[in-house]
Length: 310
Image (cartoon, rainbow, N blue to C red; front, side, top):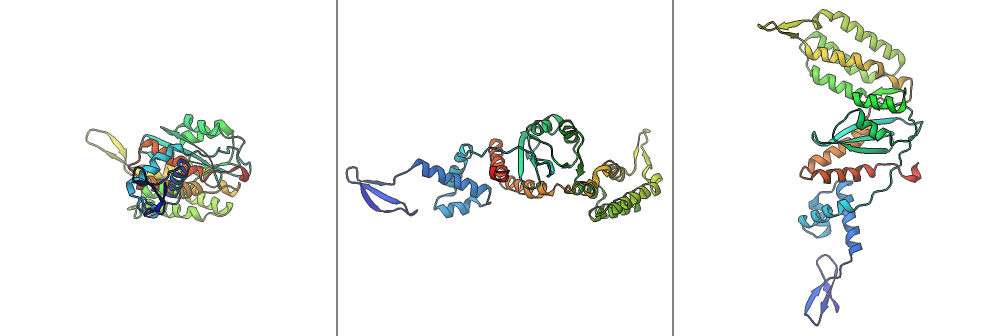
């Protein structure tokens, strides 16, 4: 065989004088490395299939096949599951397949420590991931899901806990709406907006005092009931009462960051990890569940701690 020009992709074309055919020499290791590179560019750099196809001088279908075939073969580095006693443990869950598969994620404020795929979020599943972690963190930061709180207590005992202020404020605003109809709602919305401005212990004491005063002044209003002709009744202002319960239940852990150097939100995880992952999975809704799990593995592994960072 001798060289016979190049293909449109720039590869050397070979000619066989016996069978009068041309072709290129293919190396499995080169093809494998190429497919792996495409997977990382697709998952981590967010390149679209059409751009990768143009870049590689291939069809979109061919690039997609290379990526899907390579996904299960990629070997990920070993996870470092040791906790730093001077760093927080930020915990959150993201559903990658609605009502079917969730990913529990543990983060130390800098790197992803560990993650686990589960079918539900409860004490048992959270204990599953926490028991794999070595050491004790400075404290925990979370959205205070009941199963999560129970698992943290069982695994670490009594440690400082910071309730994510963003989660509390977001839920409260959802119930209150941006334009509450009643004075109690307007005052509650203002108080919720002030959460982010609490910088000192004195600010926290003042905020709690205002909360108590608000509930005291609107006590009778919040207890109003509506009745049906059948004699059944319900609280007239259920969403306002929901915000009331939310703030009263959260207040004990809302300002832990003032006494312990913990972040006051789980934004390190929610915005830096969960947000981009959700956006990627939403854009590629056609992936099968096992492919979504594999993509999540690759995505989180790229943000995990390495040996030289330990």
